[in-house]
Image 1: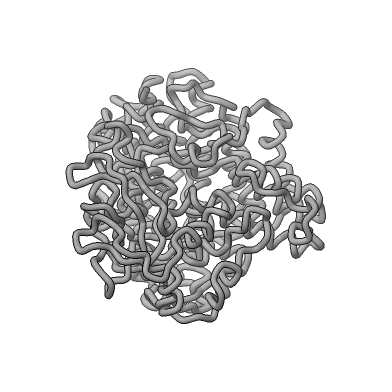
Image 2: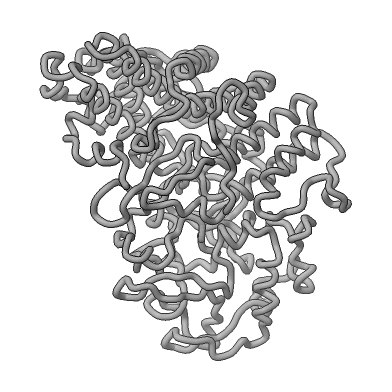
Length: 586
């Protein structure tokens, strides 16, 4: 069953959804034209009006350039490679204040801020119940904090506008200077503290996706964590992990694979704040994940593979016994060998019609498959690995079994997505995502490749548990940190840290920090967390390496400059607001 939130998102006119009557072309722009549908005489009168105004905020939050493409940020890190939408940022060489992604993210985040401000300002005087006013205000402050926290991580201090700024009256004079990082962080914490006071622990099932008290605790804890305020972060994370003051009901989803395949109204108690994607056909609301993560056999996707798992990510996953994986243990001389040697170990020949393997040549395909499937189970749940199968679709979008083969083009044909094998549209010999990618057509529920109908987490319990482990470790409580990380490992059947074998021992705080970083990469792959983690850990520079395929061949180059640690203020915003100053180095 679709939630009322999703239904209203698609039945409510755009002008009404806006609530603040702002167009999506730019929040700080001077060319904003206020709509005339939103007067105090016709709106801001009833409980339903308050609800519709709240939905306008979520519509802004879910927009692709706001938080609706969160998963794509992995391509700005070492665990994914890609060509869109952050190519200039991820590759570094053409990253500038004129980058479209920089400009779009800025504008859409401010769109969310201004919608939230409009709700906060107007709902306070509505002739409705105090409970509704509190809840809607709490939602608005949570979403405003979420937007400003992202801006803080992207640009540092930015112009701060609260509910005293009426966009309908001041759209032509939004020229505030940048506040400091400390000032902005205080505003964020203040908003989240008030949101915690006003938001409910739970909503009715029909309102899944709306911000809750637990989500506000989790986000505030994350703000503290990023600012290295360990004890405050611990207090907020423990509140929801251990139900300190309320019964939140969060729990790790038993099946890691199913967690990323929740559709048609299914929900998990692991989701603390998530985007509700409903209906994979022509109605409802669904994120466009497949256009970026899907392969050309996924609903006959025209392009696909804009973002693929990196070899760095795949090589991170441990053996089943928890020991580090090493290719040389599987194939002699693999690590130092050249592309030709690796192809000898891994490539087969297929027929010209792309229907079958005609020869395994010198490859032992069972040994190749074992090199992946005898590892941490999350590897093969997150990634389509060589010689494994994937249920894609044929030319008529009917379910059809596909296989990922590494074909030697000099010994036969090349993979064709309309037939039996998977093909990369970029021409790369890369891995493919399995996480988030629908299988077949979901028994007819899914028919539009750009509408992936899965619930997508912006905050989930496993992420919070790993952040709690990090805060514990940094606070000198490493044994507690081990216990938290082992919860995550136990779900997928991996042996716990400190459980006996020498390679599972944790000898120091620094070793535990490495373990936590590794666990976050393996657990949260494909969710957009890695880029922000690397930056806050001060590890962005050492993570920047050229993108290479399975055989070690170059796909494209990456570069790093110290100025990449903080994004440039968009050039167009500097032109619009002469009180803005640029970040160092840009």
